[in-house]
Amino acid sequence: MEKIKAAILGPGNIGSDLMYKIMRSRHLKMEMMAGIVDSPGIRRAKFLGIRTTTDGIGPIIDDREIRIVFDSTGAKPHMVHAPLLEAAGKIAVDLTPAAIGPYVVPSVNLSVLSDVPNLNMVTCGGQATVPIVHAVNRVAGVVYAEIVAAIASKSAGPGTRQNIDEFTRTTARALCVVGGAKKGKAIIVLNPAEPPLLMTDTVYTEVENPDQKAIRASIEDMVRTVQRYVPGYRLRMPPTVDDHRVVTIIEVEGAGDFLPKYSGNLDIMTSAAAAVGEALAVRMLGGRL
Image 1 (tube, one colour):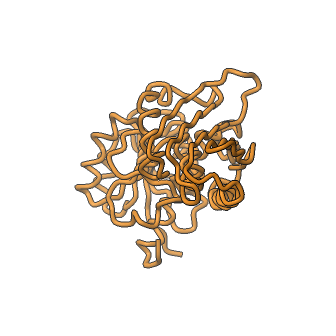
Image 2: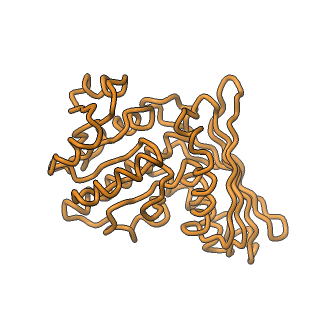
Image 3: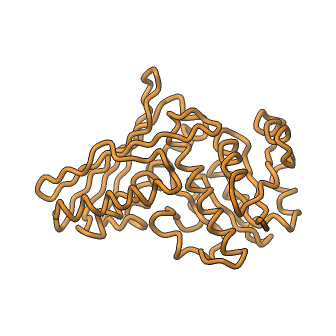
């Protein structure tokens, strides 16, 4: 079967987990892992028979056959990478909070973002909660959305900790731009509990039309949609409606490809990115996005 060649920038935890997901893809070929030092992630990819480089983005830019590039470095490096990838005619799937391109949440808006050179995967909190806000908004009209993303402290690496400000701003904006809320707010909590707890996201919304039956049906339908690419995504608490206030709690368990299963915050990012890459590859091969 013909496949589209893809590369990953950033051989850290996210890049390594994403690598395993791409290796299972029906339409993507894991062609290259790129970093700037000879790291465990680079050595892991090399052991698996994947081309590697420690010369950064250069070899990816030079390889004309690589058409999709997943950037899992950081917000500031991606600001440098994005124009280089676009000039080289490659589609960037951005797993950083840089948000140069439009936000994409596969269960909500992937089908309308087929012709842009840069797709931003929002944040882990955004991938988990934007679908719920969208599900509520389409039947009840969301005036305000506030989310609290609680993740295991052990699953928050240096990149996550350095980008917390970007996380809150990007997630809050995505609640409005993609989720449909008129106003949004995001909070992240690093939970130090031992053993580490699964990612838990509390979604609070104020709505115009508090139809409990319609809200619950819409959310349950959305959860099933997200589960197609994130099997560990589930309702921890079904929506409760009190006057015009709706509260829903989501739990995310990782697939355990490379990262521990409690790292659902990272797994939902790599799973969503892989789903985007798969859809783009299908389009490049002549199918529909």
